[in-house]
Structures are given as structure tokens and as C-alpha cells.
Length: 265
Ligand SMILES: O=C(O)CCC(=O)C(=O)O
Image: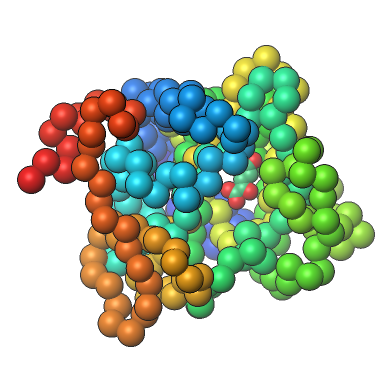
């Protein structure tokens, strides 16, 4: 982890709505994320790599292994406490020269969560730069009202990862900050902060995995949605469903370091 202390992390997050943690995971694990993108590309040939959503990931042993990494859980715990689940994982991997943009938005506008207690860890599998379409944020906007989905504008799905975004006349992006990361770095952001990213017009891949960690007291109001429980206990009366921890099956799943002994009973 970076040299910032826990208090600094929390302070920066509360003040600006985001914080960067350098070398949060090791380069080997980040490289396996890139392998996973290519492996998923073969498994789902019709799906663009910006769109490897939760439903395609929730039963992947590598995802359980990565998202349950103690370094990521320790980090998430500082923002949401000790009872930790994942409500959504989504690879937003932008191919060289043609990776889609993400229009300015606030995550909470899309999410069926009650209460909106959630934090995002955005894990860099490759370096993420201005040239390859790194994430951009507008510091301080986590204190703004959460726009409702119906207030947003429809977008061209060929160009944008998300189907709706904030209209230019609803915001000012003159204070936007580029979150340039090295592979293995993580940025953490608040569900209300306004953020997005430009298209990838460079020759390099940009691989990011965005992870939405919730305390188990947050209710996910979506039928048949599978969350993943990682740490602590469930809260009685909060009606969330949790996925089984998958067994690694050679030939069916992407091999990763330690997969032979992972989840063996
Ligand atoms: O990966 C990106 O470019 C945007 C990520 C994003 O919108 C998010 O993680 O909430």
C-alpha cells in the first residue's frame, strides 16, 4: 500500500470523493487480470471487453480469488466496515484504438441500493493513462445531489460504455482530474462523485476492474441478483442472495496462480 496512513486515506476520500492507493496488488496479479480479459474474450466472442459485467463474472473462480484478496478487503474495510460483500464487478477493458468512452455520471444514479452505503475500488490491470482513457473525476462532487436516472441523457451505445450520462448543461467539468494509475494501483471512489473517461485512441490496452463493495447491511433491491460475501457476517432481515464459492475446474475456468489448491475441500 502507499505511504498514506489509514486516517489520510479516509480524510482524502471524504474531502475529495476519491483516493489513490499505489501498488495495492502485486504486478503478477494485475497481469493475470489482463490474461483474464483475453480468456473472457474467447469465452464470450460477441461481447466487447468494456462489457464483461457482473453476470459473466460472478461464478468465475479467478474473480472470487481476486476480489477476496486480503489487501483489497483490508482497503474496502476502511470505507465500509468489517462485514463486506461485493454487489457488482465489471471489467471495463478498452481495446487499443477503439475503446469506448464513459460519459460523466454518478454511480448511485443507477444502483438499487438501500441505503447507498457502498464504495468502489477500481483496480488497474494495465497502466491507465490520459492516452488510453484513464478514469477522470471531479473532486468535491460527492457532496452534490444524486441525479435521478430520468434526469440523464440517452447516449449512443456504439460510442459509450453506459447508455445514459449527465447532460453538459447540468455540470461543469473544468476541474476534472485524470486518475493516472500504474498496473496494480487502485483508486477508490464515492458513489456520488461525478466521473467518466475518454475513449482509448492509443495503441495500448487499458484494463480496469471496477468493484462495488457493500457492507452486508446494504440491501440490493434487485430480483435474482447474486452478491458475493467475503468477510464478516450477513445481517438478519437484509434480503440479499449470495453466490456459492465456485470450485476451480481445469479446462472450464482460467487457471491462475494457486488455482490447484484454491477452494479445495
Ligand atoms: O473505467 C472507466 O473508465 C469508468 C469507471 C466507472 O465509471 C466506475 O468505476 O464507476
